[in-house]
Length: 378
Image (tube, rainbow, N blue to C red; front, side, top):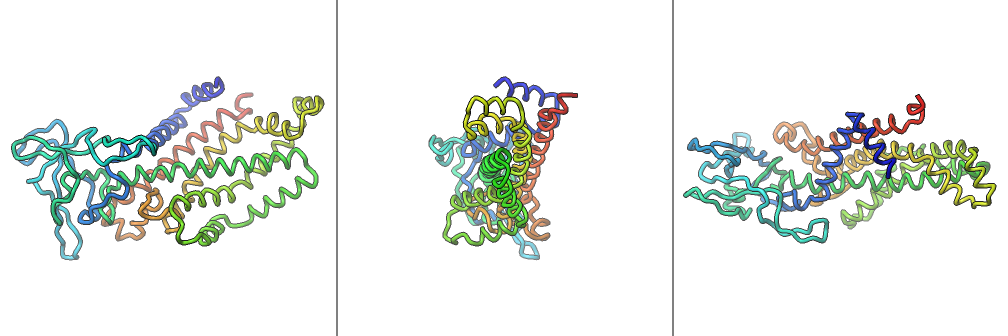
């Protein structure tokens, strides 16, 4: 525990790495409390709101009256000369942003029932009073009675902000899960190969080289194509974690093997052998813990690769399937220039991927500087 706090204090001096740590802490906190933070369920849709732009907030209404809490109007659509939807504000239907309103009942963390969300809206009636918005469509042209689209809506009228929040559970979890299994297997294989050497070392390293020679992305495509089409998104998630782990462990095993060969010649390992400790105990208790600094840095630098790989698979339709959300499959609605030009807010999930990957890289670089024994020696 003391070592953890020492690392944390060192990170505070490494400003970029500390910023990355704060960003990741915020993202993972949002992920844990997705049901509370997201105003709607990830599959709650209003088809008449297809590709509705982000909600415009105002502090002055159409009569010039100032509102301390932002207000917004329902929007109706009409078609332009190219038969594209153009949304315009309906000044007769005004709503006010509200914190902690009642809404759809969900289960926080999967088991705590709640019916309040971080934000929502109230509908202002003609007398200036307010009533809680039900979130239901009023008419084919009019909207969903105060439905807030913080980041706009997708092709089916689903709130993009809510889908990004729910999608973070896939995109942020799959990196940790994949790296955990890949690192565990790599540590085990590398530790055994480095400690025993000889025929075992040669056999295991040749197997690692075979795995590393296979183009990883094409292997992912081939294994993913072998999945049964009736698999659920949850099953696909675990299968992708397994595939990513299978592809990623070999390079770790080679590095751990080299470190193990060096560590196994140190005095404390020779002393453990002299007092009769088993080989398994020596590897697990004495050798592998000495590789912890490398493992921590490698974790933070490998997770972005797992996130990007899952996003790429979901983007081309081979990962998490709709209606379930991940940051990768949310980008599938902007697969051509015309979609990007007409609905630029659909690129926001890509921004979250970019921020997450950069935060992990900043944190990894900082940890590498802090845990590098040569830097400490200097």
